[in-house]
Length: 82
Image (cartoon, rainbow, N blue to C red; front, side, top):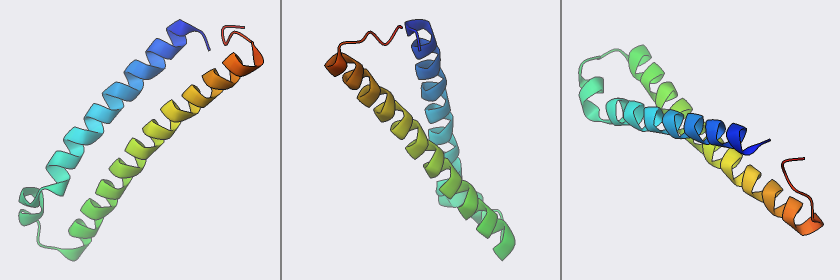
């Protein structure tokens, strides 16, 4: 992956992370749940919150994975641009 691809991935992950934070702020707060009183809707809200957290964890893992790969390339003496 070249540096331009890396910048694009980083920007995409940053924007996705920000979106997930905004969604969590809306759905984790009690205000949205107060508007709905059915068990099914509240269940779906919980599932959505869980999904937002899973996406945030995935973003972090991808970043960590790229760091590990970059370190491995340094150790074996190869340029990750190849």
